[in-house]
Every structure is written in structure tokens, then in C-alpha cells.
Length: 139
Image (cartoon, rainbow, N blue to C red):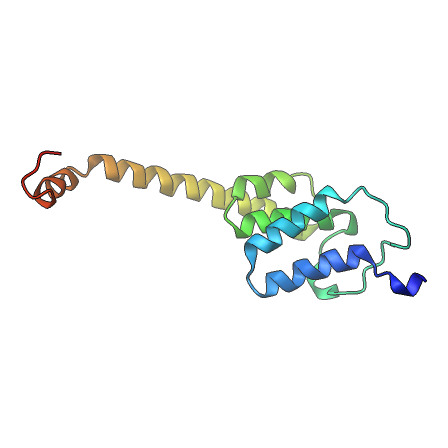
């Protein structure tokens, strides 16, 4: 009867890896959120031994897998602040790097957003184009 069941933890993480390989970033985000939400649920027959994707998981402590996957999925969809927050207390090297890189990217994103907003405000030529394109109608 035990052979009829599969290891849920392995299945969840394998789906994340396969979706990441294919660039399905929003699917990865959803799966990682599901894994993170179910991290405390004990499932009979599930052990901490992971035998898939050893290379992918190097540099990550097993207890940090779910936080890392969720943070990585946030990073992939450019939610840098959320990614940095999730791995802020990580001790292993890969999540620590992700934390620092996500902070850097969040700062850069805010800087670019604010410079774009400033250039739009100062662009008075934009209003002249609107008047010309209106065909003589007042806007």
C-alpha cells in the first residue's frame, strides 16, 4: 500500500524545479507559496532526505529550502523586497546571496522608477503632442 503513495515533499519540489527550467515564473511562484504554506504539515512516510537535484540544492541548508524557493520565485517575478524579506535570516550561502542581490535590485528598481516618473513630469513636449493629435479639439 505504501508503494501506491508518492513522497509529497519531493513531488512539490520537483514541480518547482521543472517549472523553473521552463521559465514558468508565475507557476513557480504559486508552487513555492504552496510549499511554504504547507511546510509545517507532517505527511506520513515523508522524510527529510531529498534525492533529486543535488546540484540545484548545494549551498542551501535543507530547513531553508521552502523559504529559498519562495524567495527565488518572488525574485524571478521582480518582487525584490518580498524576496529579500523571506531570506533575511538565512545562514547558508545561496539564500544569503539572494537576500543581498534582491536588496540591490529593489534599490535599483526604485531608482529607475523615480527617475522615469521625474522625466515624465518635466516633459512639456508631451502636452503639445496631445493638442496636435487632438485634431483641433481642446483637451
